[in-house]
Length: 360
Image (tube, rainbow, N blue to C red; front, side, top):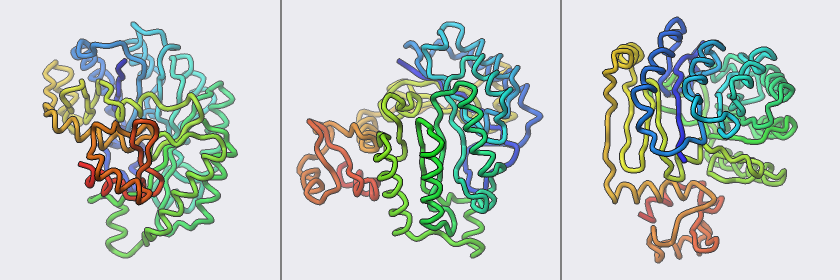
């Protein structure tokens, strides 16, 4: 099976930590959707397998009008019955209303990924989010009341000056709200972002490494206790609710990426579109889109298989790694054996990049 990723780069405002390709030029949305449709018609032949997941990511896809989403849905799902798909829309809590979620469901969207990030208003303001904690809770309840029973939320930890008490409150809210999936990431101070500039000028204080590790461990402990499966280093799901879209990246599954800055993978090559809104629209509408292309060598594919496999609870095959080195890491408590596969432990996840370097 294969997947489709559609990048919607539009945001009403830019978060201070974001280094994804995004824009606040909302007036370009209608023309951009036409460009997406043109790209889909030109490239759909690249999908050589049936699809089982469509993911609208961003940016903020929930800023698109219902009419624009309908155009995309009707065109791309025409050969696939929506109930056979995991059809995900990323949404900002501030965009979620009873009317909009009802319309999304009618379009065949059956999974929401809601960008909550925190349930603390002070922290939300600090990182530049445009919603409040109460809006986030209300949005989740609104989606649930509309019949969405596959909801993921994004959560961040190690935010500037965040305390363990604040983090415990966030985790408790996740459990109280009864979502099916959690994607959780420690804040990374990416070069060129507003939040990194604040750190460099001593306007904010980063959380120390020990506190960051304790936050991560607490999350694992609490979610595991409440039935969530820790199936990837940053992803947790109730049984049967693993994200097909996320899993495609880690399991060597082909996917077609549409939109400015979107990446594609066919099992042997990677392609990516230009990160320039105007140029993407112009090229796509004139059927002259020229994605960059990289052919992966056998060695590169092996490296990626190990890097991505060790991020997951499935781990990697013993044939893919140096078992002498692996045995030493097992004895150190950083790796463990599950059947014939090698997996990282929680302690291993703390130093995953260094762990991978030792195995390659």
